[in-house]
Image (cartoon, rainbow, N blue to C red; front, side, top):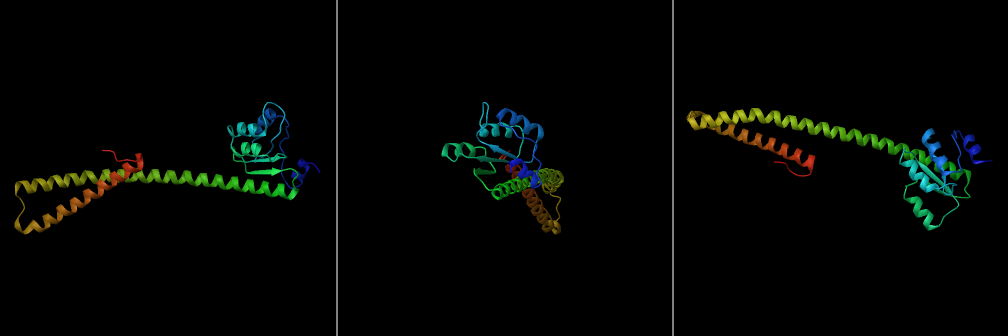
Length: 197
């Protein structure tokens, strides 16, 4: 039984079969299949590895190599594109099907991980923006209060019975300013890797 019939017998849809590298690239880019089974030895100007590089520069999908070549040079060249499997001929039907399923599963997990990473990056950006706004919103009233405290102190308007409360207020303001300063420094470090004045 041919490869196409074996795959179709197990529920896969084969969108094409090309022996020329250039035609294989066009077919894959046009059809955008879930997976590519690529022979390393193809007709035309390129081999299967070169064709795979060209494909991956256009679309993202898992590539599984099917080849009779196990020499170090061929294998090293193939590794450069990070294939999802490298199956040596002759192979069993079971071996082929298992590798296809693993490749599809691994690719799906990678897509999910990418989506979670993007969501996490967005959440971190939203958090930084929120902290920046919070730091700014805290700094304005604190600066106003600090100015009032300074004026009261300069004018000698603090009565003896209120001195303890006044000292406590100054301590609270100093602590609050330190919190805002720490927030700003933390945001500056996270944004650029160093503090910005």
